[in-house]
Length: 79
Image (cartoon, rainbow, N blue to C red):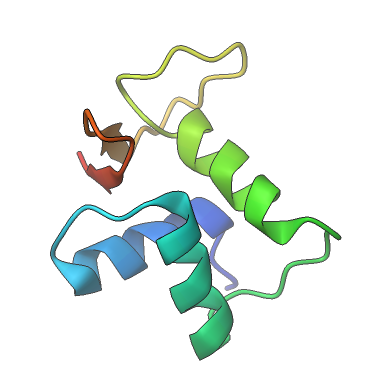
């Protein structure tokens, strides 16, 4: 079964062992071919999904499964 983008991002964060920016996560996903984006602005899609699955960010369409927290400097880490 294919993983959702937020699950792939969680795998990247787990492997890195440190908080990462959305751009850094996107770079790893792209370089390793971990997810096939169908959107023109894939980095924006990833950033949106990260925010949607982050506990300490209030968004209108908050996901029930929040895997991330955002650090003060704007990076994402596993919750």
